[in-house]
Amino acid sequence: MGKPILYEILEKPATSCVIAMCTAIWLYIQKKNIGYSHVGLSYETAIEGHYWRIITSAFSHISIIHLVFNMSALWSLGVVEQLGHMGLGTEFYLHYSLVLVVVSGVLVLGAYHVLIQKFKLEYFRRVTAIGYSCVVFGWMTILAVKQPSSKLNLFGFLSLPISFAPFESLIFTSIIVPQASFLGHLSGIISGYAIAWGLIHGMNNYWAVSMLGWIIFVFVLSLKRSGAFHFNFLEIESVTDPSLPSMRFASGNGRTLQMSSLPVVGVNLA
Image (cartoon, rainbow, N blue to C red; front, side, top):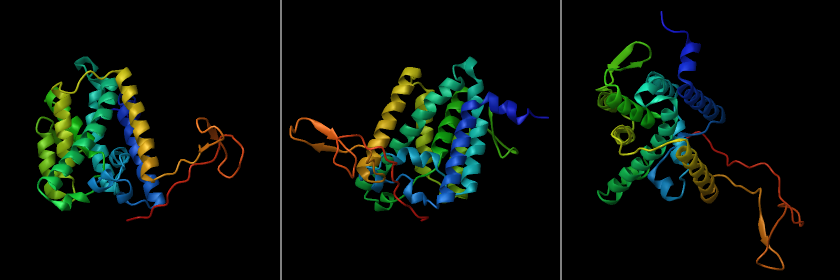
């Protein structure tokens, strides 16, 4: 008889939080009828300044099967949180999950750029990557290097040796699911090896918080500049002395701070 689910959740707090967040985002997307093209990552939207999609694409999924497959694999890989004695553990998991999201997203865009600019494959200009599988493949690879004797369990009955799982899964998903992002999964594997082999290292609480701060800054700035969302809570206008800014309500003439809700651009299911 296995461990009670509550006990396992307590053993994998970060993994459980990520699964809960991805599930909540999927439910929100379904409720609002948001199409994957509005949150996914593509080369065309990236060159338009939609850098925020590196984050939204990672945590969004297009179907319940897509979500369940990724979260089932992630739950099994949450064993990383229990390997603190090997230099892994919950802090390591949180720090490098952040790295995997960003690095794998940048690698996907880099691959698209090379294929489009060097090999003139315009098809990849609009290919949209979406899902947490880049990070899943990254953790699969890290665990394959750090703990090759582990097993990857899917859906509670399918078990794969973790040492072969990254490339087995890469080939399997590419054959069984034609829409699967080969480049996205491969970028996760490359990112995972970079972390496992120490090419990317030195993350601690300070660097993780700093990195998170920059991610939030770029996320909000790119949302603003791309026009995806409008942040009208602060309006700057020139006054008598052009060197001194004034802040006012959007509809008023007084110099004060506007306290209004943030409007959201409407989206429809693609």
